[in-house]
Image (tube, rainbow, N blue to C red; front, side, top):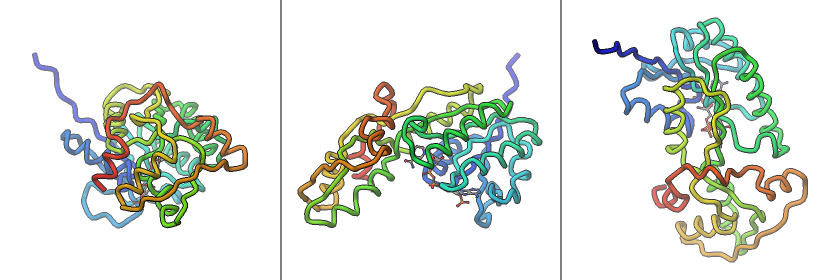
Length: 251
Ligand SMILES: NC(=O)c1ccc[n+]([C@@H]2O[C@H](COP(=O)([O-])OP(=O)(O)OC[C@H]3O[C@@H](n4cnc5c(N)ncnc54)[C@H](OP(=O)(O)O)[C@@H]3O)[C@@H](O)[C@H]2O)c1
């Protein structure tokens, strides 16, 4: 007898964002049953209008789902957003909750990272089946950090490295996790290369035709020290395949 194939209903919060939209595209390509939570007016029946800050519309979006991949984020209210989602998920029969976090949230003393670490703990102790996936910095963020300085004749960059990763690579991992069993804390996911900020700025300069002298500088403070020590890197997890230069060539 052929086993019955049961459709997995997946909600992606932040499905309109950089990572979330890559994940939605991947899941749709694979023929999965996907819906998105967004604060913006719904343009398609698969978009559920809702706000994790006020809670409005969230219960409806969560109802009937088997898996929620939480890609929505708010720099100032990260944990509050997750708390609303956890409450809604409890009422909706405890679907598998997958949370996207950042490599080094417990090592780099940045307010946003501390909030993400707190959110990881909130999920881990929520009693819901959950998976936490930490990733390194996305290509787009690294480019956005470095590009403005390339307008200067001499470009100062922090004396540190990044391991940028493509959102399509992270989306591949998240899609696997969403369709699998709850895994608790999953192994970190990193980009294919670890490069200095100077090397990355040079790559951005090359594609924009702005060849400049790049000067690495030390930045004061404990947050920078943690970055300079590589707290945000995952050298044993070079999982992504799309390199920073490949990403730049496409954008
Ligand atoms: N950027 C990086 O380098 C990086 C690295 C590792 C991990 N991460 C993590 O990856 C996740 C996704 O990051 P991203 O850069 O792809 O995010 P993003 O592009 O900034 O998108 C943020 C999303 O959050 C949604 N959102 C914000 N406030 C909301 C609210 N009150 N209610 C409902 N939805 C809300 C937005 O949806 P609407 O505007 O449609 O409502 C938007 O889709 C985050 O958890 C981030 O910490 C990021």
